[in-house]
Amino acid sequence: MSATQQPSTDAEPTDKESRLKSYLREKAEDGELYFKSKFIADDVGMSPKEIGALMVKLSNSAKDLDVEKWSYTSATTWRVQPA
Image 1: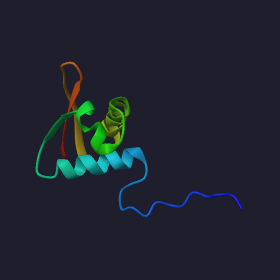
Image 2 (image 1 turned 90 degrees about the vertical axis):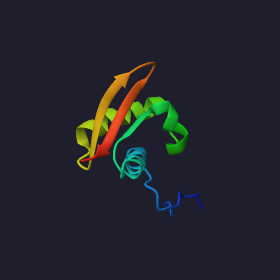
Image 3 (image 1 turned 135 degrees about the vertical axis):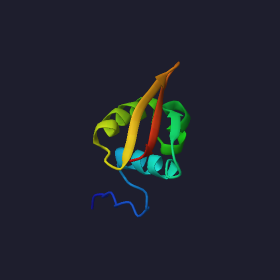
Image 4 (image 1 turned 90 degrees about the horizontal axis):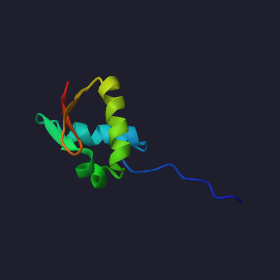
């Protein structure tokens, strides 16, 4: 018998994009959120580079979040707010 991967029973999203989107939605629910990827990397379990790539994708595809590349000082600062 071979080992099979069991579906996750956690309430958290399983793919990285959904996990990041849920995190951003939760943190920005009361207004704007400004952050650098390196400061939330541990919270979402991804590298800053992965977060940066997903943020570009979310800025074009997220209907419920307004995602904007805000500034660049040693790393990109992102601005997120509910749409």
